[in-house]
Length: 324
Figure 1: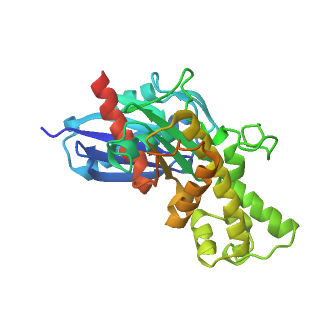
Figure 2: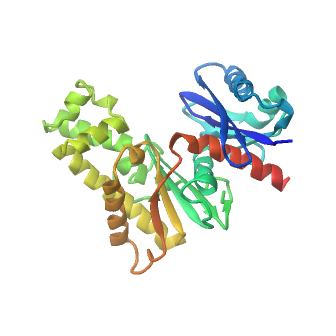
């Protein structure tokens, strides 16, 4: 009998589930809005319904589904499956694993969404066959995941990989975490948006972004930035020069400390840009890494795009089921 698993990518705005076979092929998908403002139990009901819908779409026998893996936001305990705190969901100490198992009746395994995305790239994407890698995902914020000796590394308090909160500029801009000078406060899409708003609204700088957003600079998305870069907009080029610098500082520090085989760069911002962006990051990393530490370290773009979450969650389910 063919054995399959379900991978679930849970975000603040949408829930995506997929039935995935043993070779990593996606047999079916289902998507529903998260509607995070609803009561927690209602949101979990919605996740369960999304999983059932993926079952039905796949046409596979229900008893062929071995396990469910889910990537969820916020600090969480991967052993108990409790989401400790997820501000974009309004969740605190939610026992997601046990709640889903009670609804679906299938073993369920939970991990941080960025860890799961990193695991997806390691198992099926750019990092396939690589033993030690770091995933860095640049979007609204900056998240990271670490694979050591082929396994996700969680750390003593299960929070390893918070790459967005390494300090790259002492006493720099305030981050959402409350600290100053974090990588996320200097190189995320949110940080770039703040830089554009300051330059255009306060300093009167000209930019095509004003036209692309119909004057609402809060609407800047990764695709908007890609269009501005293609038009060689001077302000956008300037902001991206700063962004690549700080990503280079962060990556150089990671390489100095951990010296992984590979660094995989993903997330909406990276996906929307061309290879020159990755090349600029490599050059910046070389500037801030110790001599020769980058030898043998590959810095590459993620390959799975939007599928990284569900494929990583599927890989998590198989791995945890195998480990018993």
